Length: 376
View 1: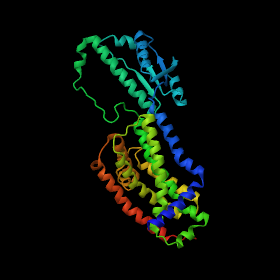
View 2: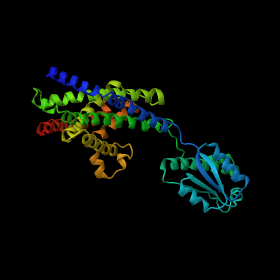
View 3: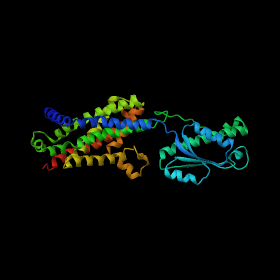
View 4: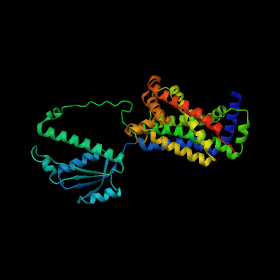
């Protein structure tokens, strides 16, 4: 059996290497995509275009603007006199936010009694990431300004007015860098996408080349055929995955705190499951174009349940339950836990068992479907 599998693997590798552009696309296409994602998310969000309507024009308002400017979050590009002009800038997307300082702001701020001064901040919610950053920066600056004014009114005892003093400790991503989350998520998705797409064209390519009938009459079992078709896809996926992971670690500072052996071993389980799905798509497809389109539809479905775009915990209960049948959901939990937290086998065992359970259904199903297909 091993000899037959080896011969089929050699045949598959020869067919793949006959198209050098495909090898370059598989190895360096994902690497360039991951690098662009890491590059764009590793830098903090700064210099957001912002409009200012200063109706007070007092030393207090100018001090506030100077402090906001020092945060580097805001880039004050528009200084307006009309509040109504702000809406047009926000609608056009010219600014992410607009700060409105009301008249008598400085006067009200200097009096411990009387009307409390207020600031209006209009945000463009069409870009929630930039808007969230701007909101957090504004809230932090306003809180610091409140504390400063209180200290001026009642002395240094102002700090004792808080009933609860939070003591924050962030683990595994002390700087709260977005790239520490986005890059591993991109890596996990690309690993599955490569394996699925390479496997999805395996059978359909044989059908187009006219060699499928020869495989069907050859003295090989369906299981041996699946293994032989899977090994080249796994090798290419592993090479691309390791290249991307090394670039993420040494180029963009993504930590690798866990065991390489555990990570690659867990990946092999889910890769076989994903490859079986790809081979089923390939068996149903009449040509390679249909296979690639089917694989793309499956990748987009898995993207939804991976938790990359929308956390699975925030989905409706029915969708949360449905996520458990997709291998990508369990793989992403395992990948982040090993990579970022350095956990051991006992922590990820429930997700590994879930992957094995899915494989126990998908892999025999793939063998059965390959045997039931009409290969004309």
